[in-house]
Length: 252
Image 1 (cartoon, rainbow, N blue to C red):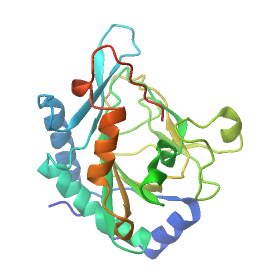
Image 2 (cartoon, rainbow, N blue to C red):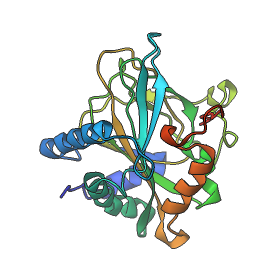
Image 3 (spheres, rainbow, N blue to C red):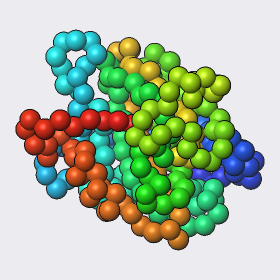
Image 4 (cartoon, helix red, strand yellow):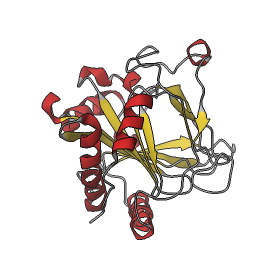
């Protein structure tokens, strides 16, 4: 059983001031090792309809290689990640001030040659359709550095959308934002809400950079996990479920 930390008053206050709070060494080394074991297990499992979702991307190295880009919807199919999502829920509840429920989960793999992510707020991906407010728990699986594309975050101007839904933030919208690189080590946790602007660069190193993200909303607003993935299956299904010849575009 994993044991996510109980947050301190200072950490909770920092989160409410900035929209995020960093908790280094939140998971013990043995627990961080299990995250690596579970991620390898998922990546090695066969891709099949009715299981976890796998997405791929072409390598930026131009060799024609297809890389695992992201695995989503693991919690119903993997006991380890179900344990992780549950262990994080209490800390999210501290930040929300009430009981939390899982909304979605994923691992961004960012393998060597993997692409980065443009500046965005997570709520731009249509999340306000379901609930009013979300908090992410980001758990580092591999050491994340400037070379392999660690996360970069900026203090949110307010708990609201700055940009348009389904579009990355523009140069004009980010001009006054001070993005800071956040190198992290296995077992570190970053809590940040869905309005915090963030981005990351491509992985130009020879080391993989896997990071787990679990997103939660207030239970009082509803449990949307199944509905969210049912809706996403219609617009952006996992690669194995896609219709040949149909174009699918990742927007934000």
